[in-house]
Amino acid sequence: MSKHKIILSGGGTGGHIYPAIAIANELKSRYPDAEFLFVGAKDRMEMEKVPQAGYKIKGLWITGIQRQLTLKNLMFPFKLINSLWNARKIVNEFKPDVAIGTGGFASGPLLQVAASKGIPSLIQEQNSYPGITNKLLSKKVQKICVAYEGLDRFFPKHKIIKTGNPVRQGLLDINSKRATAIKHFELVEDKKTLLVLGGSLGAKAINELLKRELDFLQTQQLQIIWQTGKLYYNDYKINGDIKHVHVHEFINNMDYAYAAADFIISRAGAGSVSELCIVGKPVVFVPSPYVAEDHQTKNARAIVDENAALMISQADLEVDFKNKFSQLVSSVEKQQQLSENIKKLALVNATKEIVDEVEKLLNK
Image (cartoon, rainbow, N blue to C red; front, side, top):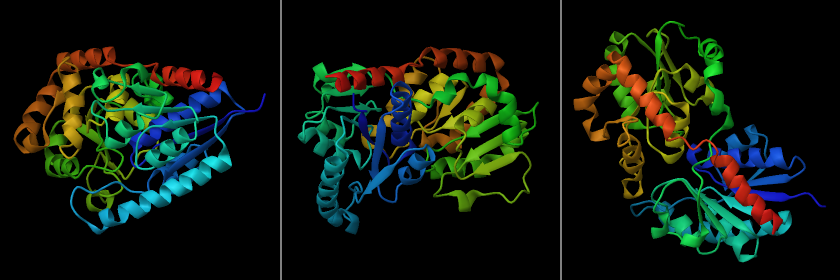
């Protein structure tokens, strides 16, 4: 039998890239001889992260539509036509047996072309509120794997399978990595650690919060692992004059970061929420207010309503942060409660269940 050829597309942010890599890794474990090709957007982070994970990638000249009228928006029709043409060329040359999309700019043209050529196709929707690309693609693909209930408002019901979101498999056993993680980040072993994440690209409001509250956080006897994101690193890096604060542009070893952490401050993108449920540490969500339908607040609210995390809106950070965070640090009972409850919400088999659906398409 000839080996399987699998094409995947997802990118723009880590929330689209890492699920695609997790799916590819699980497929590779089942089909070691399979050939994989990723398709991403030129100049986006997938062009770096996918090769680091050991996979080939080709880039399309595509970006999203900006909310206001800009020169980039005027270029969008040309980029879309160019990307569809190049996606068709890639698909014709690679001849995949199945196409998988996890969202992001490039997945639209790639999945559109694959589905129109009759290639069995699957999309994985991470959020409680899907973007326009996946809404359009849902009419063309065979399967739609989701992480939330109620998505039949947007997608054909008979195509939906609730699997949860794929996460990096290294997160499934972080407790055994704590000693290594403390050494990796050069932390003090008996000091509590705060991990601060603003998503893969960074979050200005969270970075400003950290800068403003560093003195307060140090009075809480904490050491800090702070991921600023690529866009903000030069504005917030610390020249070694503040003890116990470790600033990183990007953290590649997220399993170590989670293993070392005692508390976490994070955005509430769907991928982050899914990972944090598995990690099971006390979390303070600061949802981004800049996303479609305010879906990060909805993602976080689903966890907070189960008494499994805290949430502070971005607008309330200056007023509420010190009070809420100091209460969390001082209450061991609250920490244990949040940890136990968030672990109950974890969908640990998501990647395997998604790949089970991919296998069904391969075997047709």
